[in-house]
Amino acid sequence: MDLKTYLREKKDLVDSFLVDYFSSPLAPPKLQESLVYSLSAGGKRVRPVLCIAAYEACGKNAQEVVPFAAALELIHTYSLIHDDLPAMDNDDLRRGKPTNHKVFGEGMAILAGDGLLTEAFYLLSSSDRHQPSGLLKVIHEVARAAGIRGMVGGQAQDLLSENTEPDAATLAYIHTHKTAALIAASVKIGGILACTSEAHLNALAEYGENIGLAFQVIDDILDIEGETEVIGKPKGSDEKKKKMTYPKLYGIEKSKEKARELIDNALKALEVFDEKADPLRAIARYLLERKN
Image (cartoon, rainbow, N blue to C red; front, side):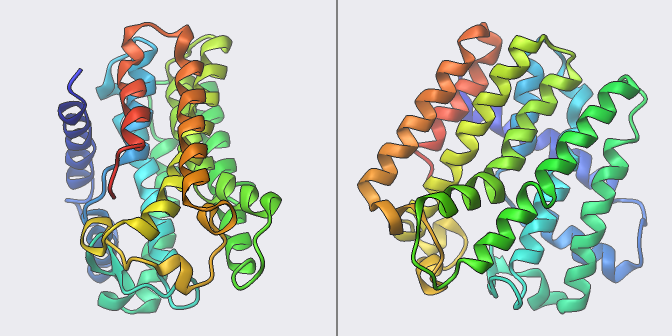
């Protein structure tokens, strides 16, 4: 399959939905401008595309799941806006553009993040196409992955661990919660919405957990080996902030081995699926080659 074409087509589906969704005035103009600024700043739409690919792997039509996929992008974008704030990572660039607070001020950036997170759950709960029981499971899964049991918990531990000596248990906690949790949930809710079997849902969950962690391990590597113009943020920012990362604890080569092992595990998890899961397989392999 042509992965570049697939990724572009699914990204376009999500982008078109977001443009249409925010074409109506939903908030005070400056707030809406702020959140649209970050939503439209680029990005690969990894989480939405994974949700769509998982839904299609279960034999369903991509169009039916786009609003849910878009909701995941709202959550991801909110987390980036807040991550970049002076009180957090204090970054000036995101996806090659000035960060939200640099353009709109800290107060509006905080509110834009709050608005995106809340609007995501409005979207997740608005479908009349899917069964209420399925929607409840989806909302439960996303809330767990995005909140204190997942991403927020990981972000908190990430902050607390700056300027400390790295250890395996803390590093694993940060990465599986801060990044992997929402990626894994993105895959899993595709299966939930498709009403797939328990065996297939478990396989999707295992796939998502492995590629979620691999994604962050590779991010750690790119912070050292990547180029600012390509990765869209200052190279070496993790080291500058004394972040706890895989290369810092294990070195570059062992970190690359870990990423390959995680991708292998993800591919094995998909053995219960037929060729409809090929996009998920291709995405897993692509992660090892990505430059941003």
